[in-house]
Image 1 (tube, rainbow, N blue to C red):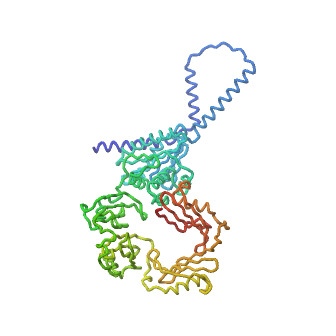
Image 2 (cartoon, helix red, strand yellow):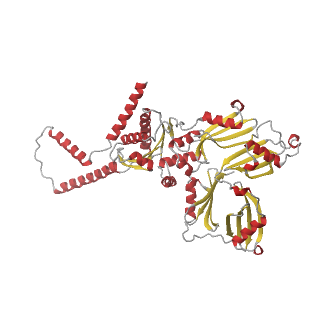
Image 3 (cartoon, helix red, strand yellow):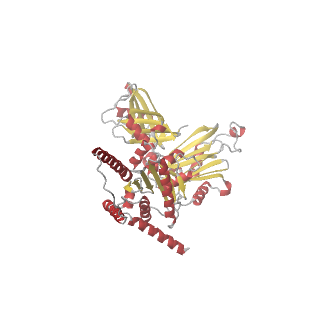
Length: 582
């Protein structure tokens, strides 16, 4: 077995060495001259025949023959140029390095284009022009192996073929896939090859250019997004092909949009493994494996990391966990009642309404105890009574550090119906443990900033609310035909945000230095990773926010609703959101 492995490694080294040695093609002129010399030698070796002297042809015959010869030469020259110098196919290789190879009809390399910095490491100073495509591909993959881009922890490569002749493109894709599979099998690991022919539109081409990736990688990302619209193009563009392969194979139950063929399995050796992730979820839930049912796991990309997305049911509840695939940390989790569970009391039944409600303080205490926290260590704690499917519940929300906790507590029994927590980017400041400013103070702060007196405004109102766990006053009022909206920090009195709109006089025309509505929509579509043809219910309005001209872009695509605020002067995305279109 050891001897076989040594032979395999030697075979790999020999193939890579052979590929590199063929990357310096002979001079084209020398090749042509040598062909001519060979032809002359062959003619000299033939039998010499004596030919009778021909009679001189009329001048018009000579002219016709010359014209015919010129036409033949012209046609032959054009054909020669088309066969040897025009791009017939483009082959893309993606691992994390992204490389494009342009070839002619003879599958000779015309140009190799590194699409990112990693690709420049792979190509180095090698000159591939005039080389056979297969030798070039072998050399590039050999370089990826030597530089560690292909290894046992990241074994996936994407091969994409874009050809003017679809039949030839498919044949070339198949040939290269078989060649690369065979090449990778001779090394210390088995590779996973994804392959596809390209059918991209101009929108996809633009996305590839904007994110500095190949058209092939852009099409694979689009395929993943079609199967799981929760993802955005911006999130996925930075991932390696091995990570994208894991996401693509996890969504295998969904119908494919494009024809992407896969051989082998994406490596999971960089991660803790499903068994450990499952054990972490069960341990946190306080359950054993024989107590759960309907268990599911798939890879996902959440909160900027690869995660094991785990779901299961137990004792009338549905559990959901996102486990960091590299570290095993719990990124987020939730538990909610399974409405199909037969043991739950029916809405409006005597059992559900026979007892008095527990106190709000008790609901808070139950939530804090479950989270393992003291009230003194949390911020922005609040609770309110609500009704969920006719059942009285307390909604309890609080922060600890940068983590937001949400609990639903049965208002009668005190049972925890559901809970979740998420790590957010907002960090509550220590100063916000203090008492709230008054509603009158919040109004006064807003009016002072707007340069108005309370006597000169109409319909003024304010209410306390919570924004990402932060207590704020929402203050709204009118002056003339202008509506003002302010968000005031309820503890410090700081103005968090404000905007104003002139009713009936909304800015609609393009101002100086304005990017325009069409450009704003294009920026939003590109960031969301959707094509304009897949968008519906699109709206774009020019507005003012914090004194800044912005385009508010809203649209729907793939079962989701998107909202963007785009700076009208420079096209920067100020904020965006994405939610399911119910």
